[in-house]
Structure formats: structure tokens, C-alpha cells
Image 1 (tube, helix red, strand yellow):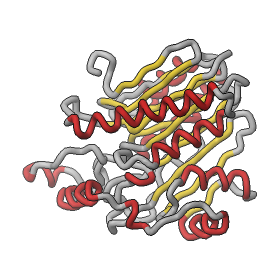
Image 2: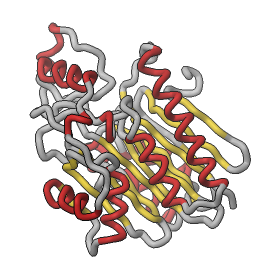
Image 3: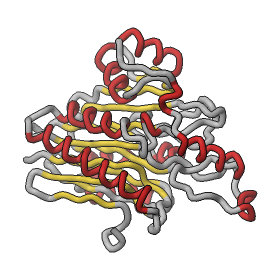
Image 4: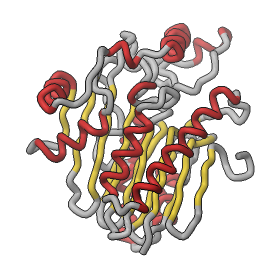
Length: 321
């Protein structure tokens, strides 16, 4: 048995010709966050502490759709959500509708540890954050010029838009609507197993560009975007509604539990057979230190490392990276 860690920064229609100024900061952030997670595991930190630490770092990076980089609702506001889960105990915490909390993932852990509940949202979650003394800022802190421009493009196209989407040409703008447009990308997540076999998963997101106020995606829904048990830990990303339909994270664990298949087999089955192409990617680790990062989208920002020395940082398939 050995430790393993995997993290993601979103899956979707990431163009292979993504400009270096958009690609390189994200790759460097993945490398930086992977190093933080590996160092923590080598220091014998619990998997739950590791995934929280890594996702906090990803939330603080403005080029991912979580925390500081969260995309904007149709009203030009941020509504962040996050979830964390401990595999051995199945204890979990989730939050939605945050507008001032610097690190939503840490508030979700406080929900898990300090309340009798699993999920808090909107005004109640904000009040709990103030009660717990977590770091908060004015909501303007989260509104970056890039996300203001993304919202402008999405509104002009009348669509719910992925955050890596390139500007839409006028002649195709009317082909998509907010009801059936592209969904989220850029969600961040981390899964880990430590040397004691403890498993944990954490996921955080700003949701969709131009999403309706009050919309909740897959990230904070246990078994959809986030799940961990004694067999594996899973964090998903892609089109939130499709991930909810497919109960993606729980299905990976269920295939392992009830069919007895390996982590890689279970994850490949869910990604390739259970969710329509172009909708999902995930990172997962098993109790035995196995790691997998499949996706059925064009690409997924991802990174992983294991105790035996394997590591990977990628965006597209291995032949394109």
C-alpha cells in the first residue's frame, strides 16, 4: 500500500491550440499544487487534510473556475460551491451560494465537523462562515476582468457558457440557448489516499458562466461530483447536469463495490459508457494506491503522483500533450 494523489482543473472542449498565456499558468498551477500535495503526503498528513490543502491552493488561483477565479452568474455575481468527503467514515460537508468566502472548501469541512448537517447554502452558509470566523472578503474580490468578459460573451450569445470557450461568431450565436448550451468547466478537485489507506475527495467550483442565480451543480452533491468510501475517492468535472444524471462519482465506487472491478475499469466504464461523450472527466484513487484520470471531453487539466515515483501532468490525450 502506498500514497497516491490526483487533481484536476476542469474538463471540456479545451482547444488543442489553447493560447500559451491561458495554458501555461494553469499547467504551472497544477504542478505547484501537485508538489504541495505530495509533500503533505510524504509528511504523513491525513488524506482529508491533503485534499483540503490542495483545493484551497487551487481556489486561490485566478485561472481556475473556483474561489478567486469563479465565473459569474447572469446577474454578474459569484455563487461558489464546494464539497469534501472522508472515505473511511463517509462523513462529508458541502456548501453552495457563497459570495464572500475566500476558501469554500474549508467551509465545507467546517459544515462536516461543526454541524449536525451535511449541506448549507446561500444566506445560511454565509452566516455560518461568519460564525466560524473563516476568511471573507467583499464579493468584488472574486470578479476578475476575464470573467466579466466571459459573461459579456455569454450574454451576447444567449447561452450558458463554459469558461474556456473562445469568442462566439455572430453567425452561430443563435444556434445555442441558455437551456441547452455548454455547461461548466474549470471546476477544481483533488483526491488522495495516504499511507494508512485513508481516502478523501474534495471539489470546488464557481459553476457556469451566465448561470441562473440559485443554480446548483454537481460539485456539492454527494455521489455526483464528489464521493469517497473505503474503496476509492472520486472528484468529477465537466457538464454538471450530465454528471448529476449519471451519479458519476458514486457509480465508480459502486462498480468496484458490487462488481469487484478495479478502479481503472470502473472509472473507464462510467466515463466511456454511462455518460454521453463530451460531458465528463474525473480523477480517482483507490485504497491500494491506484490512480486514474479518464475523460470523454476534448481535454482535462489534470495531474497525479504515486509513492512508487509515477507522475503525470496533462491536458489532452497523451498523444496531444
